Amino acid sequence: MDAHDAGRTARSLETLHALCYFSPEVESSLVELGLRKGRMCYFAGRAAPMGRVGGGPVTATFYVFNPSLVGHFIPSAWELAAPAEVHAARYRGVDAAYRNLLGEDVIGSAEMAEAAEIARELAEGCTPEGRALHAAHADMAWPDEPHLVLFHALTLVREHRGDGHVAALLHAGLSGREALVSHTATGKGFTVPAAQATRGWSAQEWQDSVDALTARGVMAGDGLTADGVALRAQVEADTDRLGLAPWAALGEERATRLRELARPFAKQAVAAGAFPGDVFA
Image (cartoon, rainbow, N blue to C red; front, side, top):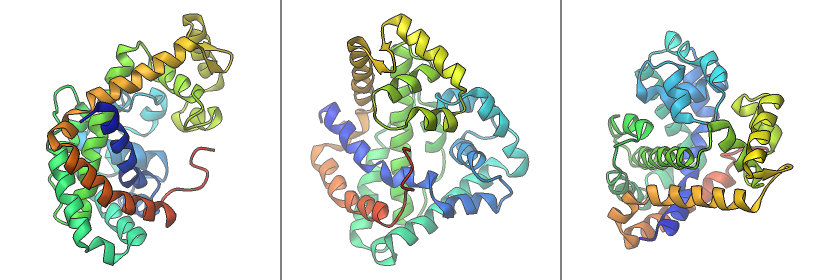
């Protein structure tokens, strides 16, 4: 399977994983354990499979966040709830979110069961070497219900691809902050204020990275130079290449079938309000 096509397919299915970060059901489930709303739930929920780690490993694997922001919540979250409890609560929240967004008929459908089967086959084609966050999630037990199998499989694929993306950024010589600044300069995704606020960078820290990237010839003003555009394109191409293995093992026919089955679920979830309208504002 072509790496670019595999990457495009992966991104088209990512909605069914990413909704957990915006789900009130997931946050409520984590808050019930004693975690604080907002960033603590995000950091702890995603990092829990790594165990009782400090802020360093979380910052290293999440990559684009200010270490001081991560350190404000991790490891203090583990004093409020053990990582295993956090992971279980996250999946209880995902269960509720999927049921509310998709409905019981979809949850219990043959299409959901088939999508879960193919997605698990896909995830089992991921390799853990050098993929710390993926490997931690892969160590977790598989759920039993098909919709949670689908979510778990797509989470494994997402974190596998994300670990490869970090490797591509490192190869490109982009720090976490520079990666965020240069990605925002593409005009895709976050605006500058949203990126600064959600990832914990001050205006001065942001400008420092703009200056460094300008000196390097990657940026000019608030935008990318031709070299910067080429650098970001290479990062994306490398990310697709490094994420190809599970899709190549699955094969194009099975990948196409998974996309056919799962994309209607993703569209329904979005239509039902899985994401706030100002996600990228």
